[in-house]
Image: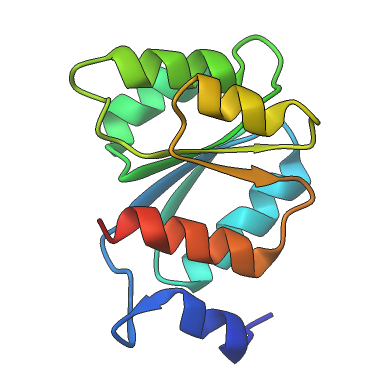
Length: 137
């Protein structure tokens, strides 16, 4: 499912965002599959995580340039993960984008100092533009 229109959003200066690592954590497998497909097709290296309890070990091993986190997940929420990342000396520089269908999602994302927020269901172009914005800094 390669779409040239979308492809152009994923590129910086006409080149894929080579070398940028995105960690996506969501308990919804369909969201994981779509975001992984779209971002990999754009030249990002993506690691999907469905079990939020594994997130810290994956962050340590994968060394992501950006975290894309669902707000509400069982065991360890995107809110918990973001609070930890934003207060940890070694991790606080990693941009965090929260995705959520919750009507309170945007407010919570701002309160926990997430860098960005995307409401579910999100537009693919909006996802790509936001990821590009935070990985090009």
